[in-house]
Structures are given as structure tokens and as C-alpha cells.
Length: 336
Image (cartoon, rainbow, N blue to C red; front, side, top):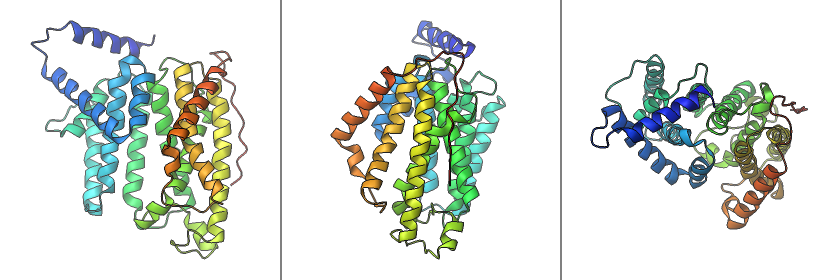
């Protein structure tokens, strides 16, 4: 067991042995934030809620809920139509300041309940250069990018960095919270599955995003083909969607190969289920001939859930047979 997980176990045992009638204020606040985080997660995403509840390392469950709930709140605040660009950036600067102060050990007062989630999350981060800190920093980068891109065309390089930040954040969270002590690929292979997921996510949301001012097609492609933002069903746009869908498929194939070599069964199960959720979207996009639509309700059907669960479980059971000390990386040929 790592020193981090040992510390969590010690804290948990101490809190259970402490007199129930005299908790300290930090303990009371932490209990409150844990309850809030679990409730927010359950309302926002039942799949995330149950993934955390059943697959995350036991000592890290409360922090996993805090991590999800905090950034769910930040994302919702950034997306509010009634907030001006100045207010949006001021909000993000405040959140970045709170996080920076907490990591210096300077705990701010007068935090709202959602900000307290971040403070309690960081209070439990005992590792130097932890995956949790990387997750927090990269997710804040994602939020900052989203806050500044509304209403403007985005270059291909910027969109690639956006995907890179999101893939890094989600992957590091997965590795931190599930199978914390298990070995992980030290190279780029660790990010491939989530890279494919974000490419698919951008396709899934493109119709809705375009309607509210977020452009998911690179500026260079729009200009090269003389496309307007509303030309989502133009043949050139459909070609681009097909290229991105095929790229996501390649990332998923390579990411699944990397996951299969990981020794943590729970991490493999979570990873395969995560890939499967987005492959259902790709199936629908391909079935539609790469004509994007506003919603993909079939991915939420009972039939899809059963297929997803069975596929993830079967892939988990028949993988993970390599050694724990040496994880050979898959190779990925990417053609953009």
C-alpha cells in the first residue's frame, strides 16, 4: 500500500475512533462537503456516481465525488448565458486563486459550499506531483479554454491542446482514484482512450455547441472549404466528421490495448466501460452517414446499457494477463 493510501486509512480510522459528540470544525466541514459532493454527482450523472461508489479505492471515494462535483459546478458556472465574459473570467481567476492558495497550505476563509469541495479535496492530497494535482490543474485549463472560446473561431492547434488537457485530466483522475498503487504506462499510451472519447464528445455535442456559439471545427478547415458555421450538413463537413470518427476509433483501439495490460481489474473495467459509452455514439454517427444531430438518446437505452455492461465485463475478465512491472506500449498510427 502506498503512503498516500496509508494516510487515508489512518485518517479514516481516526475519524471513526474520535468521539462522535465533539468533531472538530474541519471534520464537520469535510463531512458536509462529502455529502454534498455525492448528492451532486448522483443528480448530474448516475453512471459516474455508481462508478465511483463501486470501483474507486475505498479511502478515496469521498474525494472522487468532490473532484467530479466541484468541476461539474465550475463547468455549469462557465456555461451560464447570463454571465458576461468579464464575470466568467473573474470567476475562474477566483477558483484558480483558491486552488493555488490551498496547495500552498494557505486555507481561505469564506468559501461557498462548492469551493469548499476543492479545499477539502486538496487538503487530502499528500503526494508530491500527484495525479490528483495534475487533474485539478488540467481541468482548470479546460475550463479556462471553454470560457474564452465562445463566439470565436478556434485554430486546429488550440483544439488539439484542448483535447490534450482534457485527456490528461481524466486519465490522471482515473489512475489516481482507481487502482492507485497499480502500475501505469509512463508514456503517451495512457492518454489514448480519453483522447478518443473527447474527439467523440466534440462530435456528439457539435450541433448544440454551434447553436450557442462554441465552434468545434478548426478555423483552417472552415476557411479551406468555404464553410459557414451553420453548414453542419455540408458534404465537406460530413467528410470532416468521418475523419474524426475514424481517428477516434483508432485511439480507442490503441487505448483498449493499453488498458488490457493494466494490472488493476477495477481500472480496466472502468476504462472499458468509458470507451464503450463513446463507441455507442460513434456507432450512431456512422449509422447516420456522418450527419450529426442534436441528441443521441439510443446511447441511454436499457439495451445499450446491457450491451455496454456485458462488453466491459467480458473485456476485463479476458485482459490484464501481462506482468505488472512491464507494460509494453501499443503503437498508434495517426493520420490527420
